[in-house]
Length: 212
Image (cartoon, rainbow, N blue to C red; front, side, top):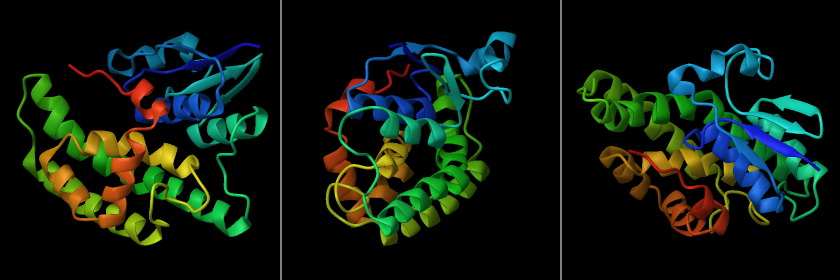
């Protein structure tokens, strides 16, 4: 069996797919595609992902792109603990949380807040505080909504770790590296307790990105 994930280790989306593979105990190869250097728009990668995004996935010749499709496939195609709730309402809540992160959370948390406060200074620049303010406003709303939807305890959905946890954890990892993000997270009791628990899981520790 051959399983390959194409994407950079620092990508939250690629990390979500890696987390699913790790939680299922699937052996895989991470083929690095550095999106910051434009590698995702090379012809080789566009053949895998026509929109030039990451990750892309291959299982014995079966190719997929789009993170949620990949992680659902991983959960359903391989043996190991289930990563989706058994009941219809639980799966719907899981999918809703993933969609909130995808549609609203990623841009604000990663594209605005983390990028301006962490990446821009690493590159020798100064953050655009107007962008930071806009990102923080949406981040606060996203965290409020997920705080209200979360089951409480160590997982976002009742019944154990699900795809929702794997979708949110890489984003919250970067959020917690920014001072306003860490403050915002600390102000949401359920999410703060969830992050304290989830960040110690072996899959999270193993896939933690090395920045700088």
